[in-house]
Image (cartoon, rainbow, N blue to C red; front, top):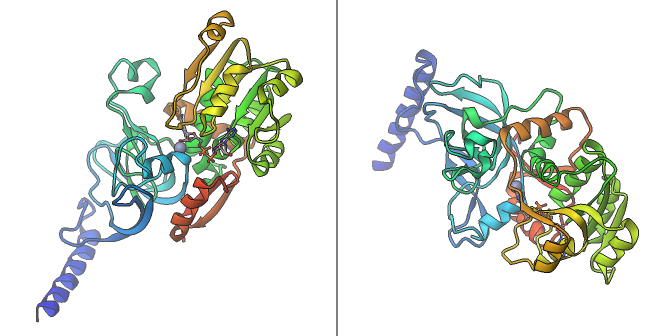
Length: 375
Ligand code: 8ID
Ligand code: ZN
């Protein structure tokens, strides 16, 4: 009898739900009914991920927008988050390379409307008034919210975003490719900006994975530099060549990587390190030219060795670079829409997420695997 009653009550809720939707557009959520959606979350032990049925977010608050997710790329940072490398967040919906269509907007939203295609990025929201937010360094905001880490991210059928911070995807940019620009693209585009490169200079890109292949493309096609790509995986180096690298170096096969780069290029003017290993960071510092810049992007939980003498005598700058601002993302998207940069992506079913994370850990992914929420 109880089960019968429960079923009846559910039917009643469904009916009320549809009536609400039909007759009262202003009603944001329909009371008791819990609608489920697919979501990729950090598992309870914080050792990896699982695909679960998760409550669909339905209450669109002031300034928020509800997005029907189409695609979400799997970034190595998601793997760090899943493993608790930055602190454990069990149950958190992962994903900061989300792309989707706005389905509903909350009160006070002026920048987005239903039907807009938007991104769900690591830089999810800043306070808007601190010293970083007001000086073009909003990703460093001390009250920042990060999608897929401190707030639920884009690896689910639906996601809530803060409308003012959700950067629109331009017309003409393939949404699965746009997902890869939402983190990998903007991060490397910004890192090369931070390297302060000049056309014709040599840039070393360490790590030719999801970020690295885009770093090569932005460096070559947008900044007009020459590129040497370093990886320890031959497959990644084939991709690096295809992506436009002038010179590739296998860190496992070439004994003296720094010496080899010195011989071929005379020392690179700058280096962007996306590799998840301190070995690469050390090589980058060892082989950058006097006056050069090493931009640290990868996030291995290690310390790098920095020769004080070399740093001082050679006037080397070592800077950390974290994703990019909304403006950086807008620019990075635009280079994608122009066809200058073409992310290497493969769309895969959502229920293969656990396997994809495993492949990423083993270094087996070429470019990016993108979870397809349209199917
Ligand atoms: O804003 C940021 N700073 C930011 C944004 C996004 C991602 C930082 N990241 C971080 C990630 O958290 C991760 O630590 O950048 C790193 C790279 O992310 P990814 O490109 O998404 O990971 P990947 O696809 O696994 O590629 C890593 C590459 O590094 C190579 C691997 O072979 C792979 O191609 N690599 C490794 I591991 N050790 C190497 C070494 N010693 C190496 N390449 C050269 N030398
Ligand atoms: Zn990322």
